[in-house]
Image (cartoon, rainbow, N blue to C red):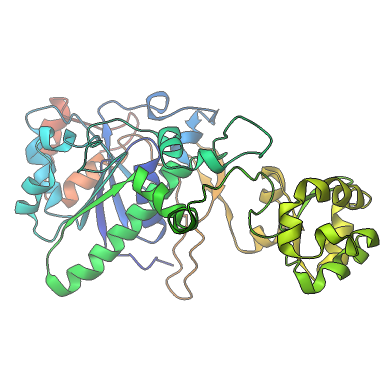
Amino acid sequence: MPGPLQGIRILDFTWAIAGPYGSMILTDLGAEIWKIETIFQNEQRRGAGPYVHDVSTYFFSVNRGKKSLMIDLKAPEAKEIIHRLVSEVDVLTENFSPGTMDRLGFGYEELSKINEQLVYASTSGFGHTGPYRDRGAVDIIVQGMGGVMSTTGHESDPLPSRVGYSIGDMAAGIYTSIGVLSALVERQASGKGQHVDVAMLDTQVALIENLVIRHLGTGEIQPRVGLRSPNYTPHQALPASDGWIVLAGVKDDNWQLFCGMIGADELAIDGRFLTNHLRTINYDELEPMMFAATRKKTKAQWIEELGDTFVVGPLNNIAEVANDPQVNHRNMIVELPTWTGGSLKVSNTPVKHSRTLGGAINGASKPGEHTNEILETAGFSREEINSLIDSGVVAISPNIDD
């Protein structure tokens, strides 16, 4: 079934991860995406490997369901083409460095004169204002500058750690999609579009909200705490005989019960551990004794025995996540076709609607697969399209019928 954004059309200039991830969210929700791609694009230029079925998994993972138009943005004719496309869309998304779209002639001020209802969403490292505006940034830069890496990793390790996936990129994409959706809602009342400006660094500051308020309220700077919470003990990962579990819900009133259930009655009466505060400040003494107890049984045994009283689950690797029955019941892993004839499994959208279902339906398009369709939809004649193709301003993929 169509998603709730059916009827919304987006002109997508995004590249790499942050921008495409944000527009992919909108695609999964039913929007039609016209993706602008570099002239004569191919899979090797599209993104890194691994390449499966001759397709870049890097590109495929964040560009599913988008229609592809290949165009030479530096050609003199490109400006008129983009202007005509802008008149047919609701949203434009881009994640170039600030000023790039202006230099191309596609900045917000110019395009909003063509379409005053245009929602124009820009994702960048530091935003379109401020002293860092012109600096470049990628995921690891904003993880470092945004405080994330300073709190990630084991407390005994002098080295900071990057979060294991691109949270700087992904968070920016998520907030960009929120910005677009809120601007579309506001447009219903005002009849006007606006510029949505999302900075990757800003999103990292937003995500560490609890750490910010703790510091500004108390002066504390949270250190790395590794596998546990800085506030509650035990609230953490624990070793089993065949891997790790994660545990929460142990409080002062059930601490003795927990100790009995793991076969460590001596901990229940140890004065160093009677309260959460004491357990937290004396954690270095508690950990080896608690670990010795939990290593005596398997993950499945602990989940079965502790699950009715505490919140507990396995610490899964990626293969275990992909095969988890709850994950698959929720249709969070879906198989999509590639344009080369194979298929790839990807993560689905976590947003579930009861009527307008949406979700990942189509894989990433062949480069230039929809050049003809997009231009025709925007009102270009067959003669105009052929002329643009012949002059090399736009391109279609080989073996794609006119």
